Length: 234
Image (cartoon, rainbow, N blue to C red; front, top):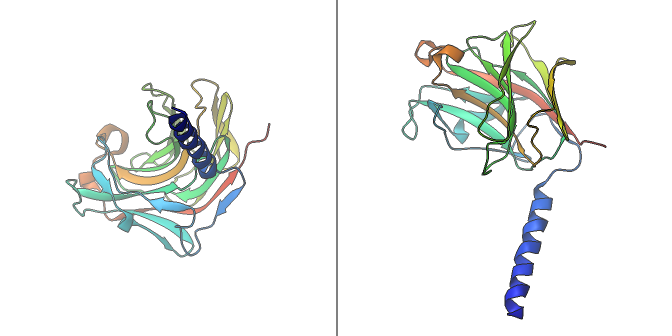
């Protein structure tokens, strides 16, 4: 019995240690000058509303940018292949800034968001841009099955140049910032568990949201110039 309790203690201790190790607690900056695989990894998966399958072959660094590609290559039962990059570390609160240029292709979504993998309830904070409406940005956040999506008009075409997108995530508060201006804030349904940072480019089934992928000029690309994380300080 004592031996069993000892083994249980070791398992719990190592689990906690691993969790702490995987959580980023200091500032992190990525410029994507040469490679991305020091702090990031490319995913290979898909989901129900995605007409594409993510492939690590569709993420690469070029001319100082992280490039996410979506093309017509069939992959894993899907008619299209997209790209998704995730941080190796988890983050709990802080300031998350990305400079990115969205895809202009119909049917496609460029996204920068925070996400908790394998969670019992959907947990995330989102920026999403559709190829159909490049002058509108969709904000969302989840702690369960209820969506809190909100469309905010932009003063520019997000597919023409790089712009700064910032998520301020604090206990009981989320703020979304674009080019130095807070465009929305909420104290409702704020996640309180560590999440990954995710960039992806995918093809939605929702023609109303993004247009039809069948009419898109492919391949198409989303580009991320840089990312910076600043820890939250009370």
